[in-house]
Image 1 (cartoon, rainbow, N blue to C red):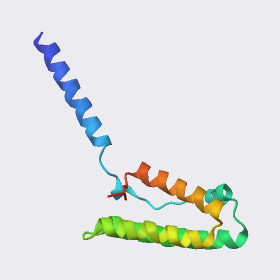
Image 2 (image 1 turned 135 degrees about the vertical axis):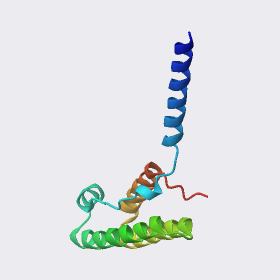
Image 3 (image 1 turned 90 degrees about the horizontal axis):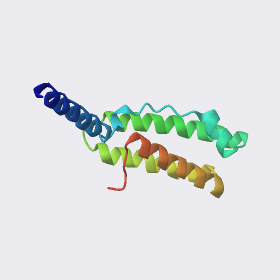
Length: 118
């Protein structure tokens, strides 16, 4: 009976720690790898737009890596990187392409644990 109780407590603790670890923000894990070729296919970009989007993605990756490694004002730098990226993309993409991109960016940020609604 004692072993069964100990096993149950151990299983409960393991389950609780696994659940708690899954809810932690993962902003430190941002690799900044954006597959520009797949993005261009998804958004159906022309050659001029493809070049501009590639440059914007490189710039965004650089800004996100700086923001995630920052010691001060991490949230503000993350917000500036994301909104700066969206602003540059809005100038480059058509309205339909931008709507698709904004939805994709929102989903990606949520999956990475980055919440800018604060």
